[in-house]
Length: 404
Image (cartoon, rainbow, N blue to C red; front, side, top):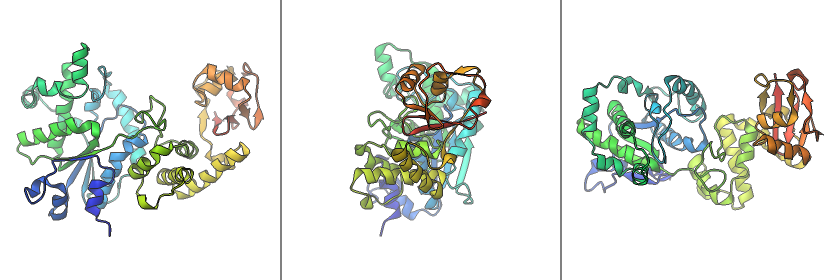
């Protein structure tokens, strides 16, 4: 029989700290604490809404948060509406652009909707959603100075990113030093027992432990998970690198991306993004790709939509068309200035990476409108109404339907 505590602490976990045998100090052993606790533990995870889209890489710690919920613990989800205005400097080779309050507010509005399929929002007492502006906006200078006395410049310059920038002569600004302390103070404010994060967050989580000690609280455990490699199979998943799968993407796009997951990534994707038993996975990579795509579309769009999507994508490959037009993502023409040329619309819709790419695709015969091949690069469309409801296709797997 599977040990639920072992599953919590082993599947998809890169590092757990501190980790000492319970025979030496039970309070320093999370497995022991989970098995012998007389209260639900408070499991913290923070999201800085520095963008508007959540992708599968972001979902990994949120899925672990849900796993703790399912074992009866309290998920404490912190929306970093205050820290987002600084931006986490981890892994950045230069200072991040500071967001305005309006920027952050706009991003926050989309976050909870995107992660709703993952977390349990309904179980009483199992989810707390907190905004760190609750406590950080009230810090006065005296309290800020107190936080700053808990760390040295040497400790900060040991942080990945800061050291490299300092050695290269790139600016490291004082407000960036405040970020780890503010994130650490979040742990004090919510009295976290465990904090989740990617492997790049160890420094920040350790700062939280130090601050909890300073304020007389038991220090939290750090549970670190791998950084997901993107669909290119090389770099970490990132929207800016266009190697991502967004949680809010339409079923066809999500399925099509995941069905092409590089073979070496399949095991990691199954482990980190699903609850499927790893011993029962298909041996054939092509079968694994299909199962992965079906499973993840089911998670975010429902099993019925996933089955329909799988059938429709199969039809795209064999017939070059979709069998269910309701699954085609829509592109609104409301913001497009008419008259407009076809190559511009192909690019603006996102089906091509640029206008020059769109021109090449049209000239190569890869562009169809309602199944009819279009080869007039400079074809001018006079009004959006002329395209409303029509389906634009590039290649075999890229579709959008125009709306007004």
